[in-house]
Image 1: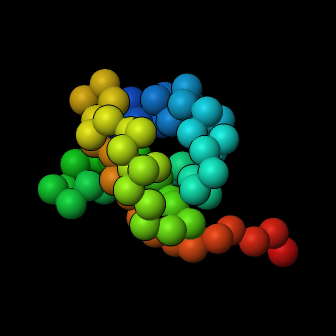
Image 2: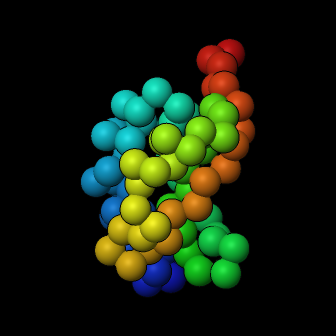
Length: 75
């Protein structure tokens, strides 16, 4: 298994519940940064600068990427 992905999953499990408490955060996942590195992907309901500013650019060397996905709906 990819060592970087293991690290991302570990960090995600530590912070996910905290980040999901933020109003505009709809999901926390893993994926690729624009530069190709393994990243934490934060899904937002809208392109909200104030919410983005809460996050550092990286956590323990893992980049954070944002994706605007809209509101999440339960089916």
